[in-house]
Amino acid sequence: ENDSYILKAAEECSDVIIAWGKSENTNQRIATRAEQVIQLLSPYAEKLKVITDGKRSLLHPLTPSLRSAWHLKSWSDYKKECSTESDK
Image 1: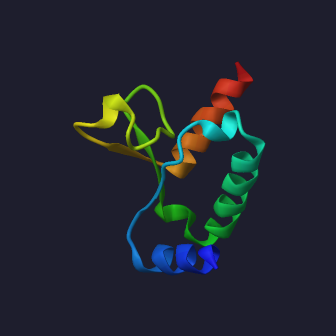
Image 2: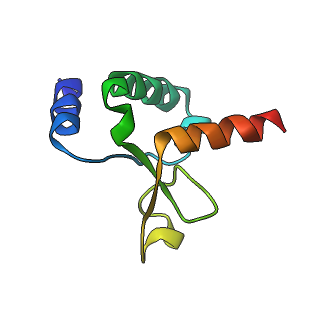
């Protein structure tokens, strides 16, 4: 049922902010669900954004460095950045 609400919201908004933080790196259940949600939202890939503080990306919205302002980066730029970092 959650998926239908996620899709409805994605359809109606201009930006979809991915903001579950880095917990997917340490929790396999979160990683699995995160991948499912990204696949679910693939028709809206151009709307996907991650929160950044200018140095780090895919941050939780309550991260202290974000409390004064959020900066958004496109999901595609974030993924390119990740693949570049993994190549190093």
